Image (cartoon, rainbow, N blue to C red; front, side, top):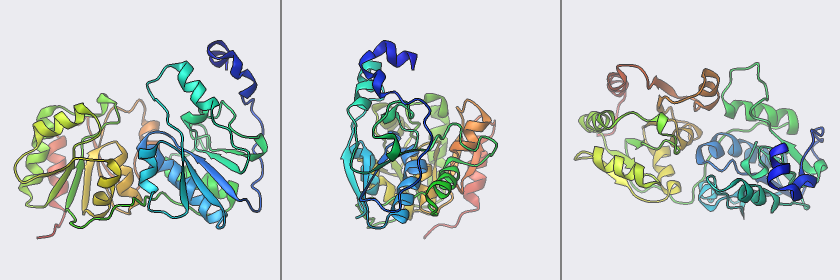
Length: 318
């Protein structure tokens, strides 16, 4: 709070000061669900709370508040509408605080999944009687569950409905691939291995004879890494992540670092193969591991051999 008071003293009146959580209304016309801003977090957490809102309020309009590229993952769901709320993750503190201050909702309830749009519940975005905050960093701290499970548990306690992570991108797949791959690391280079590993990974995938589609990603760095590593026989996807997501859902296997793709695979009921490294703690790894995932320790000396052994257990289309 002191940081906000120094950076934007005009926002002091918008600071929330530990109010009690209200009771869920019996009926409501509109529900605003704030984006977590990153794609993976929106799949793992925000989508769970959107599903809860749909189930608890079947006649309400559900508004996804966040960037357009994130909303595209649910653009095919007729219950979900988009409320644009751009947010610069790397913008100045003043700009980010003012982005939060620009939001105010009077005509419905707000479900906040610990969003940067509210500065993790610090800036009020609606009357307190309409505000429901899932404090993901502290909720059920005595449990080892992943965040999708914790979000579902909180939603059950708050709204009395079951819910799960899901995606419904608008685009459909005409040609399914056996294996989908993403080398994305969510702008955290500590999550990735070196070029030699990524080249070896693609060679191992090509050796299976399976059809493989690799996302070129959303940054110049990721695109360059994919282009350096790709080998003959592997196809690449060059476009929006929402257009790649259906391919993940239809594939037999998804492989990647800890990123949005693994959460999409999990939301589609698949068991992703995740190469995990760069977590600051074991608790963070537990929280962010996708449901159903097979996890390979990225710091192990035999990561590529473990990938090959996992591939040997898979049966692909011929």
